[in-house]
Amino acid sequence: MTQPSRILGLRATRLQRSVVALLCAQLLLSACHATSVAPLGATWPEPMPQPPEAKHATSPQWPATATVRTVPDFQAPSATHCARPVQTREVPGRDPNPVASRIERDDARTYDTAEEERVFPRSRGKRADHALAESSARTTEPPPPSAPSPSAVIASSEPTAKFAPSPSPRQRPAPPQQQQQSVTAGMVDDNADFAEYLRFRDRTQVAHRPRDVRERYLLQVRNATGAVVPDAEVAVQAPGGAAMWARTDAGGQAWLHPDAFDPNRSQVYEVAVRQNGRQASAFLRRGQKSAVDVVLSDAAAPSRARLDLVFLIDATGSMADEIGRLKSTLRTIAAEVARLPSRPDTCFGLVAYRDKGDAFLLRSHDFTNDLGAFQGVLNALQANGGGDYPESMNEALHETVHRLSWRGSGATRMVVLLADAPPHLDYGGPQYDDDMLAALGKGIKVFSVGASGLDKQGEYVQRQIAQYTGGRFVFLTYREADRPASGPGRETVHDVNNYSVQTLDRLIVRLVTEELGKLPKAS
Image (cartoon, rainbow, N blue to C red; front, side, top):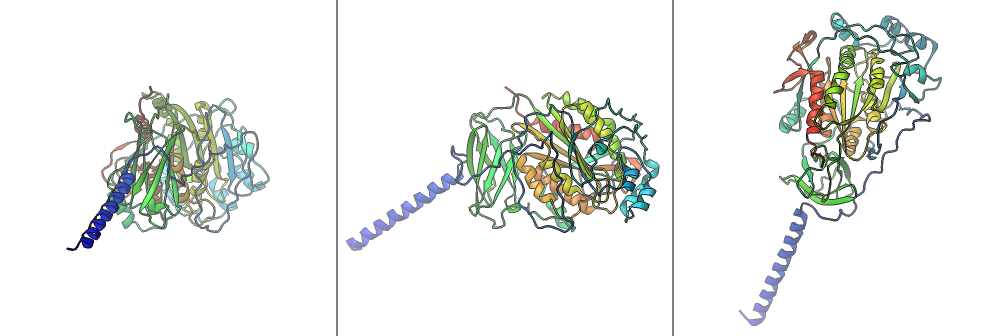
């Protein structure tokens, strides 16, 4: 080989080594679990404005036609406390009129359903069949005294939603509790058995709002000592600009589903994490087998556990048993949660919903730590109305995620969704898939409870919401799977396997216990 050829060969070898070194450096940089600087382009949601307590707010008037997908609202929760009277907000289901007022002026007052059908005729479908099949198992609650109710306080000649203090138990005595039959339930964790969940999705062909969760990655955030970091804000961004947000749960974890928000299926994502002014970042590469580990230096454990717990309830006619059981066991649930080792500072919220054409579309009671006042508004809730099978779950989930005063900075946020029907997918306005994404961004876990009569579509939607937000799917069980009137038992019609059974109130306490048990010990 001539001298010039040797020189060219050496230069080519050096160039190859330089390229290899550069590529290695880039790979090492990409593989780093965390850096001290946030990725370029990381943006964070602004704090969520709190609902006004002293002035009225206008009801959203959702159109009757279907809507295209909207960008979820990821505004961060920011309330500092819940030491307040219960604030009630109502969205009417129909325009008030004299006949409706006479029949259902006060939702807490029972009324004749045959008379309602004569005035507001509609296809009652599942509701009438369900009520007829289970009439022998129902326990009728006595009507409370005819004192001013939340709906009477809020009533207006205009279809608006307003805030008003709810009556205290002193103003309206709670109705006496009658003996309620136990309500039993099982539970599955679709994130723990994800392969089976995907098979369930494949074999269940029903109408739903599609979000692709087949590819997912676990994010784990710890501090310098190795302790988990709960409620850390997370921003995930693709090179093309698609982004999602999340908050780590009590165990410092969050599931990330890139195809649920990025239609371009990017190969790499920047993951930024922050809490209390501390910030770190990492890279998520599509196909990686390991979790995305981020170390957030100097992140401290909260001084005391804070729990925001919401009951989101379908309050149509076929839900009387489930609502009655919750009324009779609320104080037991609250007492057991208060005795947990973490001694949580607990706030309670309630959102009840029905459908268009009913006395109310939704009625929400913002967070309070006054258990007596909260028991009072729960006691005032009666199961009535409902016509066609689907209900206004979309609007109620939107209300729960966006309009309640969720506490920021270190809270554990849980929703118990209790329903026996799917949402209306033909209404305009909010859609449940947008709000389940927003719930993850705000650190809200939804634990979906499928009540008796829930069909395949309802099961699919409830499991979608629970899986994406990191919650569980809970389902009521009976002695005979397809006959709720047979009484409590171990059988279910739902597409689930390998579950244990407890009473519903015990199961709620168990879910809270497991969540709060993940929190690091306070220093």
